[in-house]
Image (tube, rainbow, N blue to C red; front, top):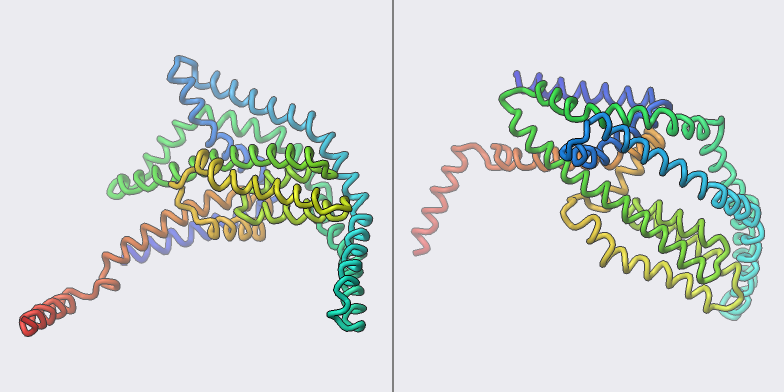
Amino acid sequence: MVDNRRTLYWIAGFGAFLAIVYLLTDILLPFVAGIILAYLLDPITDFLERHHCPRWVAAGLITFIATAAVISALLLLVPLLQSQIVDFAGRLPNYFELLREKAVVLLAAVQTQISPEEIVSIRDNIGGAAGPNALAWIGNLLTRIWGGGVALLNLLSLLVITPIVMFYLLRDWDDIVKTIDDWLPRRVAPVIREKAIEIDELLSGFLRGQFSVCLLLGVLYAIGLTLVGLDFGLIIGFVTGLISFVPYFGMLIGFAIGLGVAIAQFADWQPVAMVAGVFVIGQFLEGNFITPKFVGERIGLHPTWIVFALLAGGALFGFTGILLAVPAAAVVGVLGRISIEQYKQSEAYLGSPDVQESNDDRGGADDGTSG
């Protein structure tokens, strides 16, 4: 009875947590970002503290450097990326029209294999997909993302509130951990500490490694596509790298956009093949060198589970949910393994002792008769 009541308390607490996150999604983003940054940069703070730097000084120095780096990147990259994004959006109708014309030419080349009625139907469908419907869909997507000034408000809150949250968490991180440890039930505290360490190793290895992977891939794709001569190669390559934290899906989106622009831009097939080659080489380097180097094989998070967590977090809680998705996936993964281990040691899996003894006796009898 006590165990059931304790389980109900945990379920109720988890439900209350989800309800709070859902209700406060619009204001949680800078706080969640500050928590994640403090978690990622805490080892550097510990390093400085071990080398006789006061904790609050180390926290302030790291917060200042991180904030200055982000603001500098925004000042340097945002104007360039913004101009490319605006220019790219202005050329979208032309790209769609060029793709439609080339698709019609391709259909004409194989029209001997298709009836005239089918050609007309396919041409109409291509024109409809490449015309107002596609543009309307893109416009609605951008409106949802930027509508109501929410994006600007979130950006301002990230620049103002996140550094404050980050500084105080870095300064007090060890005290917070000690306080939480004092709250743990003494009987199961060692087990909780062990699993918390497991979650910490999994999360830190994935988050720090995946951030490095995405940044490096963005630079590689941007340089490669720009050298090939692809229009907007910088923005397409850099964004492809940044969204590569979604396994496979991010690269496929960038590949589809880059290849579509290449087909519309170039008359010959060689540049198109070179654009495809940039993505193929990037994937080869990521899978064989970059990801094993920065992330490794020890994270224990299956790509399918990560994709599901990111999509579910984004659908439920927006961008805040995306930030929380991987930590939540790591916690659920560890708790799931604990539950499976307990299940395999329970009567539900092994059967009651009487049944086991009966099975053992039957097995012994069978061995005797077979001898």
